[in-house]
Image (tube, rainbow, N blue to C red; front, side, top):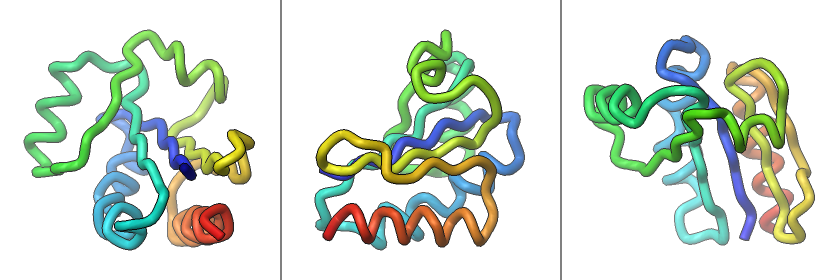
Length: 115
């Protein structure tokens, strides 16, 4: 499968913006495709993340990386950070921050990886 990993935190404004678009722009858009979407909270407790997800009404699952163990395998600084990983396990896209340009790049990378 193609995998989208997105590292985020509840206190990060660009991360919150990215998550607000995750369902419609990624999950719904690529429904039925061989895509796994893994938004992973970086450095926060389960309680903090669950409270935020519930408050925002998100229904998609999110991962926890309280000690930043997973994050440190991919990056050393900055969030949101996203990675598109091809079926062969190779990172085909890496992005920092979130705006319309990054969102378009992510969707394009996913499209290409799904071919």
